[in-house]
Amino acid sequence: MKDKWLSQNQAAKEFRISRSKIRRMLRDGLISLNKKGKLSYLRLKAALEAEKISLESGQEALADLNLRLKMAMALYREEKAKMVELERKRKEGEYVPVEEVSRAWCERALTVKNQLLSWVSKLPPLLERKGKTQISKILKVQIDELLEALYQHGSYTPGTKKN
Image 1 (tube, helix red, strand yellow):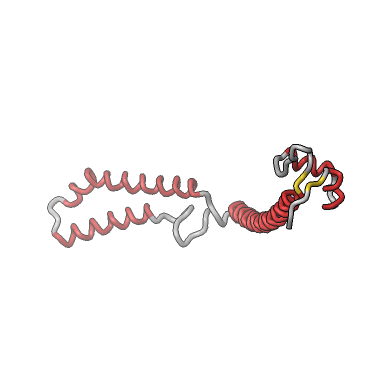
Image 2 (spheres, rainbow, N blue to C red):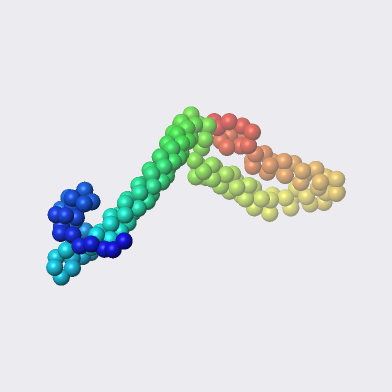
């Protein structure tokens, strides 16, 4: 098809668009006027088709973003529900903050350490001049006391409820 040249009014009527749209397209550099102030029919048609394609792909992108937003919101609501459930269980004593458990076990470890260190002065007199059987019994009693201190019933002992 041979190109034809249109005035801005003719182009607006031909393509059923407003003159302000033509001015915006001129301002944005999508189309241009020739030396006589006329518009190329073929260039205007191509620009309008490109704009239509761009609009359609923009709508597809918007639909995709909308879907992603809905998915993100659903995930957010799911995670928020999990947080509410965790907080409820924490308040009911079912879950305990890590720091609290760590502190309790550090106290137990300190008790065990102190008992082990006390063996240095406590055991030599007890074991002096004893036979293997008696030494074995004495050590067993000391180890049982140590294990009892470690596994004392109370907060955060495996298999027991928090006091």
